[in-house]
Length: 223
Image (cartoon, rainbow, N blue to C red; front, side, top):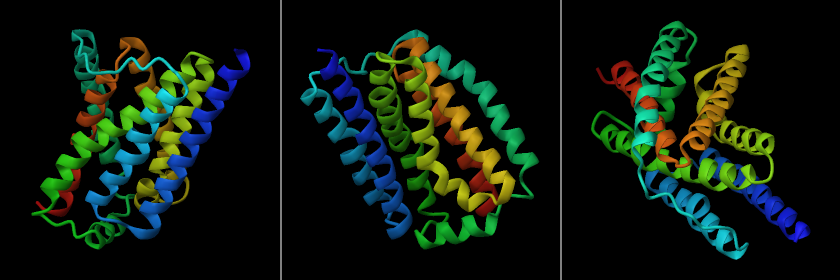
């Protein structure tokens, strides 16, 4: 029984690492349109993890129940997170490589018209899929084995997957600080999940944090 459990945990870690690196490579080598990014994420971050959970005979308690506690945690703590993001954007405005971001957006044909679709995708679908994968799949199952392993693994993978975004934004030591911020943010998302037992608190916080960033983007490029 113990060997089977260890095998299950290793399977989760190995697949999570593979999926994270694989999708990172696809997105940064081929620069696909957002519709293809969404389809890739659905396959590797949703469908295959659900299949693995059933294959490994893990408890498949899903996440559709929305509790008052998860909503309150997500919204109330977001007010603090939004303030942190806003202040960071002001302090780092002059070191952010806005031209590189603009070129990246142009390569994906993002303009003032298509931005609304990107806005909706990032806020709702992307945030949900990432919470489902990094928190419900990776963090939740590793938490039954080791709290330290669950927090560090999910946070490292989350930061690794998002390096490509901040790689465009920052250079030098600022990039290191940004990646550290991603790691700490992922630890916070995991804590929200553990505190409320559902992904909705982390999901609500995630979409509202993305809202602040997307508004900053829109003001910078299209206003």
